[in-house]
Amino acid sequence: MEKSVKKIAVIGAESTGKTTLCQKLAQHFNTTWVPEYARTYFESKSINSCQLSDIELIAKQQLHNESILVKEANQFLFCDTNLITLKIWAELEFNQQIEFIEQILPKCNYDLVLVINNSIQWQKDSLRENKFSRDLIRQLNINYLKVLQWDYAEVDPENLEKTIELILSI
Image 1: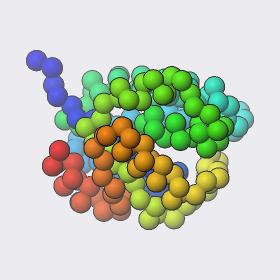
Image 2: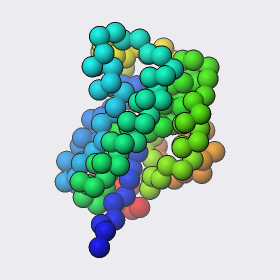
Image 3: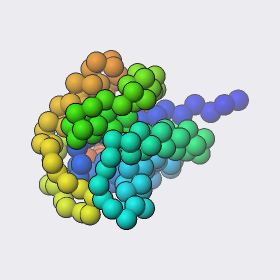
């Protein structure tokens, strides 16, 4: 009998606490989580610039990682970002859409998407650019979720208890 795992994507602007929240939720629920592949990808490159073609490669690997880690998950799989993030990135950075993302995104299946608010102060690191308003990014995430008609909830990454209660209600 195949186990049932609920997939939960955690999305939002950069430096809002997505990774930390995924780690805490995975620890709380004794399960695994899917790190944001874009970070791994750019940390492995000697340059920090992004091309449109990089985003498609990142999208494919992010989905691949989800498909592998869901097999190791216990009840929940927490995904640090999803294709909505990459769609927004391509549109804002390059003013273009990526056909692969446009075709696959509506077929992605998450039981819930958590949209992180912007309560945590932005912190610089070697990969963060903060080029676009975090409020704009949050609103674009919500707009795309509504178009896709996906279940989502806005959460404060610092209120772990409330987020856990929300997850237990799905």
